Length: 96
Image (cartoon, rainbow, N blue to C red; front, side):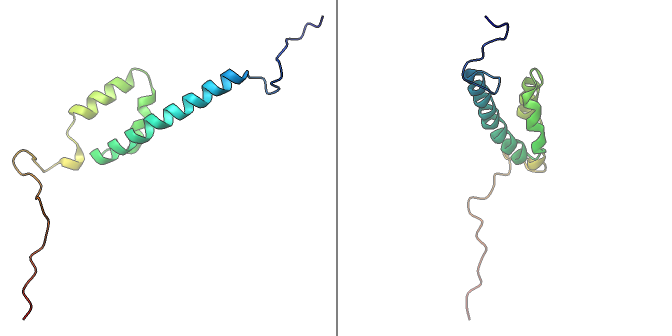
């Protein structure tokens, strides 16, 4: 009997289940970061802040900050007092 460890048919050194776990983790991270990137951008923050959501502990802080911070995209607008116009049609002068 050899002293070498049997790795099965997989020659890359990682068991197949470990590769599939890594693929699922990468896909899950993409599915989490991309929407958060869009949310940060719409709020007026840099999209790069969404990468901080990958750090345990920081992600909870970032979500609370995003929820309760004054968004730069809404500065100068008070939606409770000045709602956006329902229709933004320009008045067209009548033809003479």
